[in-house]
Amino acid sequence: MNEYRSGFVGIIGRPNVGKSTLINALAGEKLLIVSPKPQTTRDRIRVIYTTDRMQLIFYDTPGIHKPLHKLGEQMNKTALNTLKLVDVILWLVDLTQPAGKGDAWVGEALKKSGQPVVIAFNKIDLAPAYTPEEFLARVDAPAWPWLKISALTGAGLPELLARLEAMVPAGPQYYPEEMITDRPESFLISEFIREAVLSFAEEEIPHSTAVVMEEMKERPTGKIYIRSTILVEKDSQKKIVIGRNGRLLKQIGQQARAQTEAFLGQPVYLDLWVKTRKDWRNSLPALREFGYWDQGSAD
Image 1: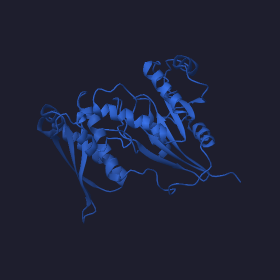
Image 2: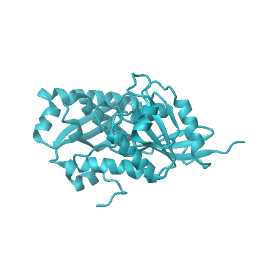
Image 3: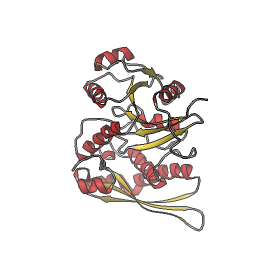
């Protein structure tokens, strides 16, 4: 009888390579928000994949990028600190985008980590910009194993899971089999709200927003009451997020409520407010308050 295998897998890559889409595909339901806008993921989020032979705990991490503020610096630190916490690193690469200096920088960081690495070339359902061999030569990667996948269609995912199963050690089942994430419902719902902001707000607005869950409780009617605050950095941004006669905020609320109801399986009353917190992305107290200060980082 084969030994049960379990381990922690850190998904690392540049922004918009499909990390959250891959996690959602492996989880079998939408847990993480996705958007064509870069730097969508801000947190290190654990998602658990369990079978009768193995348990893989995936860390979805922010895309590694050139930071423009303290939030961006913390997002990079969160991603890189994950390398210390895992048994295997899954480097996710977008096959449709040419390899650049950022990819080479990621490759160097992975070499220095000394951790086992497997490369997954994503988006094989789209027109490639290069071959895997060309990418590996461009970033001067070691002889790491690699394979091609599509997180969107599921192509190559069984092979990827088999590869990861072989790379993690024999070990216990850390989490109950029905558990698919260690994050509370309130966090996931706040992310649904932020995704709606990403969907409807103008280009410069989404990355200056944070969502704070103020209250969540079930009413006697069975409807879940949720009160959340969308924070922005400028009063002018507040006006944009609310929109004329509250139109944009209504659209944001409708999308977020639909996703939340599908997730909870219950009717929801979503009470959204918009407030200004000036320059919060460069404020260490604000980053700590909103949970964006990585515990592995020094002040």
